[in-house]
Image (cartoon, rainbow, N blue to C red; front, top):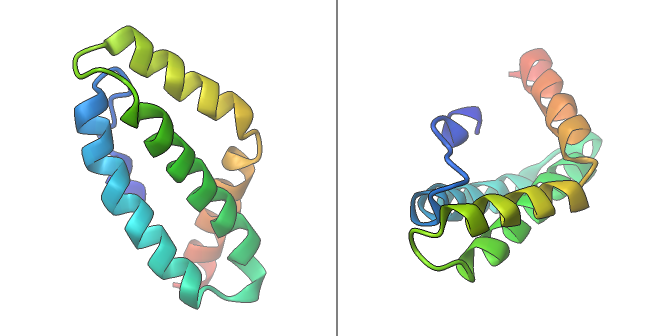
Length: 96
């Protein structure tokens, strides 16, 4: 999943949605089969990505300022994302 967000540009809502939508599908698929140990952390990531999609869907194409503001607002509203991502990365490193 880490490569999914390479080059992610929160100021380009169209490109960001192009990355986020398939990431949301992939995360949902992972959640279905996730071990109990990381299921809650994966759910945090799913919720965050879905919130980003919802927020950016309402931004006019080319409105870089509004897109960046929406991404920041969603990120601020999901303070557990960084810890969840770190937990998932550690799990992948250990188990995969």
